[in-house]
Length: 131
Ligand code: ZN
Image (cartoon, rainbow, N blue to C red; front, side):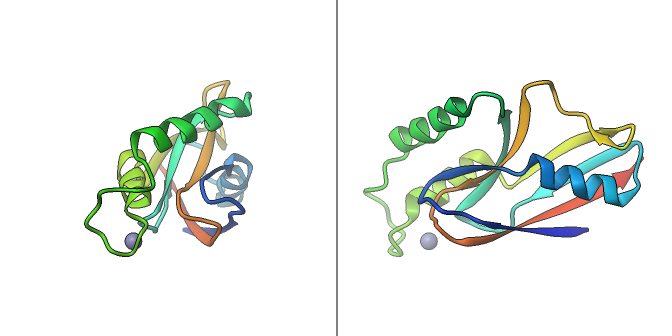
């Protein structure tokens, strides 16, 4: 198991971590199996989607902003309830097949760290399994 550190720079941001996850897979020596990526935070998440056109993840972030406005009404008094809701909607784990020692992502897919209450220093846990 390896931990990747991610320093986000925006309040809401999709950070492409595909290359860093791929480095953990390569270093693990696992040829066939799967890779689990886990975000241990309550106001961030992990998602797989298009990495070719950056406008796609901007659309995702802007759509989430419309669905889950920053200003409530919310009960959570810390002021970041929207970030918690977005984290639940997006999820804290993704799992990617490993084939031939590489992430078996689709042609257009990338793995994104999803920041919803930044900027902050964050962690991502990457676990590679053979099987
Ligand atoms: Zn909170």
